[in-house]
Length: 140
Image (tube, rainbow, N blue to C red):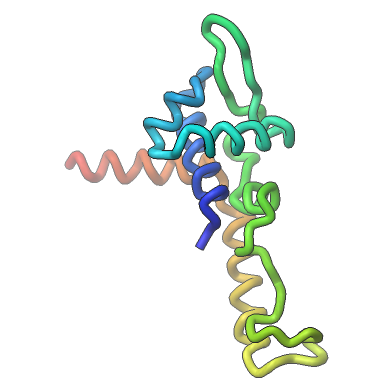
């Protein structure tokens, strides 16, 4: 499971990718069902990290600073130090590695590698595409 920060950041990025134009944080908050103050902090962080751009004034708002296909779920997880990327021993052994493995190290190590591979290959653009595809099939 993603942390709330990462889940909300993903919602925000997907919404912005769908819109393709500057959007106010308040509008994203309402459309993506994310608390406004929390989203404002998330947007601030993603802007400082170069994933979003902020425009002031009439017609201003937040836009993507990168193409949606260049933003992976892994990137977003890294920005917010998401626990999903944590490689600490599940049962708390201080030295758990391939050489000094705990009883479940092999299983979790494989799962972590699969998760990392999935997060790296899944982009904001692919989520938008899947979402649109589902909406089309739901209308049929």
